[in-house]
Image (cartoon, rainbow, N blue to C red; front, top):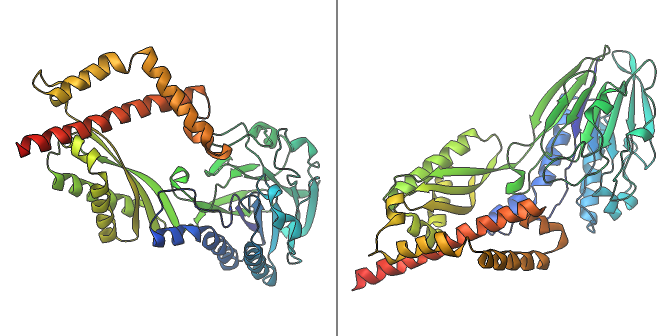
Length: 428
């Protein structure tokens, strides 16, 4: 029989909610327990497929955990595998190195947690009669600025070799650099499979001999971890051939859903377009639940009202989502703008005249730009260190953020002035 295993990483058990927009109690409860449910489903998959092993390649926890309920849940799930004769191999990642559970938790006998020095565990005759050697190394500290690959033991002769490594590889957007290395370096080791962790998006970097797989996370936690999340079910034959399958275990998936408001001049038309977009997104989603951030854009005479009445639009969107079923609207972002003719206007439209003044003279000025950057930098400095990157991870990203804030702020102010002018005109 071939050697079959499930490979996962970046589970972040009991990770706290990271979106302040998740204010719906039912939604918050569902997302708050989703990482546990996804892990339990991963164990279910192992049992259903009767695999030989489960590989967890880093960030099983979410940092300096204090709840021993997390430990009890984990031990109980791994005990299910142990009772079925399924081995578990765990590599500690950067988040796990911060966790006291990592140091205190007692796990079943069938669980191997790799230490901070390289190890290789030999499984006799596990793949069509050939031995399988499972190599790994854990993070001893939360930081790992240098490659850990040179510390691995050489491939075991006459065996199939599997390496487990928590690494950022050559770097990935939104992820810090940890234990960097190149795919070519992994290929050169002579191993048959490299199971990676750390980057939350699934990527098969090298398809065969060796297969180099970043499984991604099994469950997203906010809109920045959008899309379908899976684990990897792998089959390693005695000749070294690897077969890979992505299997969904996620409870919910997040999605940014665009809504084109171009040409819509009636509120009901916008809501109908929004409802169609939600239905299409739900049909395309594979998970039990879909959590959506709607992005309304395009040229419409209703641009000012869409910006002013965002709360009403959100209520309409959530009602549509309830009718679609198993769909939740986290928030609505509006980037709609007035059609060009309405935007330019004439001398009798004071709001249009102000728009032209802002665009031509105010926002391009050095003084305005400097003040906008100062205020944004002050706000960024008041945020906790671990989320400051949300306001620009580097100088270019910060400049782009300031541009976007200026543009959106301008449109919000003009929308409210437009609404005030319209209300005043109607009341005259």
